[in-house]
Length: 289
Image 1 (cartoon, rainbow, N blue to C red):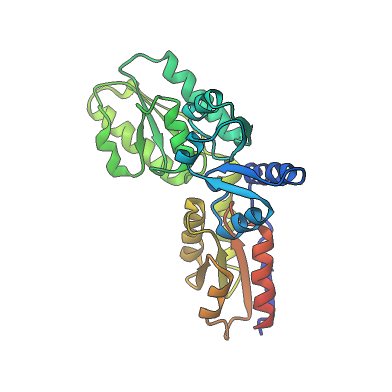
Image 2: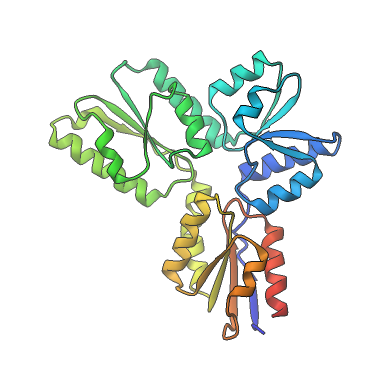
């Protein structure tokens, strides 16, 4: 039995996710069901808990066919098209878009409307991610999504551009990307044509250092995360870098496959989409091993 099992106090839901979940819970206390456009959070265990309360996760296609009902917009936000469909179909939206994401959407929308037709709007983020889809929608899908350094080739360096970032991206990767793009513009003699904005959420980005410091304190790290969480994969890799004895859990029963017999100390942590109750369950099971 391990001598010490500790849950990282900095892990767990960020403000945006907490707000979305509390909004859903409050509504379901007074109503039997509530539609939510896409997973309310990238964690299957938490989604299952809320579905048991009456939350119904729907796709964009299902949303288009709804009329005269109520739908929750999750923290990731949605593109303008969703709001137009809601108006046409008399759908009442409960908008739980994270305030940080909402501000970023407005900045990109304002830039798109005021910029010259040849200016390129660049968005650093994960292709197909819900937040990125919402940001791209502010440009009528004309923006260029940059997911890796290889995607820089998609930029026309003879035209001006402005770079934004998905709020949950790595600060280190974003800094590297900015430097690469600046060098390419400079090589073309157009360095003044490139602008960038720091739009990464500091509440999320500060987790990188916190989790690195946490990981080195224990013999074994159990990182609890949903399979779809890009933030989870990013933070888990930081744990693995600083403590090779780090394991990722997407379900509680996966704990049985991990050899903890020689671990005197176990640290439990998670993504910004990981519920604290799930980490507590992992801790309880560890204590019984």
